[in-house]
Image 1 (tube, rainbow, N blue to C red):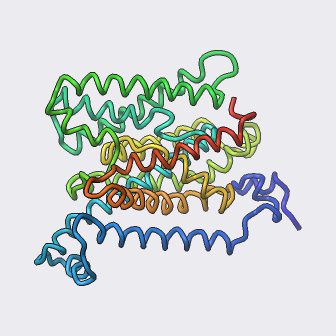
Image 2 (cartoon, helix red, strand yellow):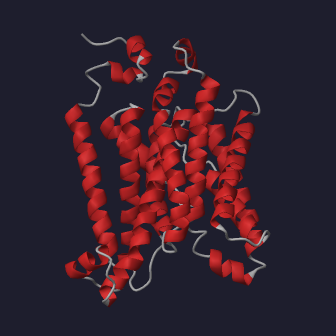
Image 3 (tube, helix red, strand yellow):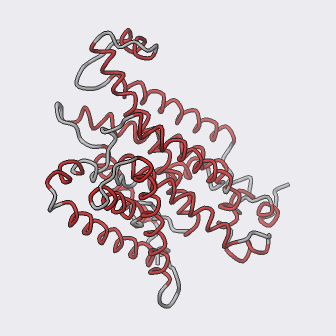
Amino acid sequence: MTATPVLAASEGVAPALASEEVAPARGRVALAFGAASLLLVVAVIASVVIGARSVGLEDLVGAVTGHAGTIGEAAITQRLPRTALAIVVGAALAVAGLGLQAVTRNPLADPGILGITSGAALAVVVTITLLGTRAPAAVTTAAIVGAAGAAGLLFVLSAVGAGGASPLKIVLSGAAISAMSVSVTSALILPRPDAMEAFRFWQIGGVGGADWRSLSWSAPLIGVGLIAAFAMTRSMNALALGDDLAAGLGERLGLARFGITAAAIVLAGLATALAGPIAFVGLMVPHACRLIAGPDHRTLLPLSAITGAALLVCADVLGRVLLPPAEVEAGIITAIMGAPVLIWIVRSREGSVR
């Protein structure tokens, strides 16, 4: 017998999951996890062997076992932190986007579109240029504070006026915050030639400047953010039912929204501190995973994390081979990929994004 929507809701699952006809088959979900994991493995291998210098299997084995006696092994050793950074940042941005979409019930929610990554980037630039410090603790703290400030301003601006925080008002407010943050960031950097050179590629978003020092500081914090987000997946499912039904089922709406938003802010802020403002990963990945795996966030979140990591590693590899010997930053690749997705989402939901 098919469960009723209320029964499914009591278990923290969106109404669509209550129908056996629309729930994705377990085999299809397992296949999606397998395909995403395989894509990530292939992308990681490609990331460590593809670059300005070709390397062979012997070089890969030597580098993994701790040797760097040949030029090829040394090249792989230098690419490993770059690959690890792409994995960490891709997973963080995908999960942050999924959380923001759940909180706002807005299909266009993405840390970049909503101005959260721009706010984090502005805070990082202020810390480095005005405070004169590049310490990982200061930079990561500033990024989280900047992301939180941008998110707070977003919700305040979108709630002003009749109708409250509608999806369209949220997107427009995010665009305004992003434009303002980018303008202030440029105003801080342009008069300082040394800072402009250092931030030129970071502003675009990429993983080419990876190092183990910054990763060792931020990756554990991102892991905590991912765990916190996973702990909130039942609340994400409850919010998908609507406020009235979620509250009737005992969900504390304010606490749930705060927890999910806080996890998304931490993830987006740390990802921006590590790789710069990379857009559209948090938009593309949750939508693609939702089409395959359905609306249950308990499945969506881990699948989005794996797919986001694979996507950013692939974008980085593609940027290396697109215009050799120059490299195209991963942020440019994701922007090129994400723009058509954004247009498709807007057109497919033309009557609902208001």
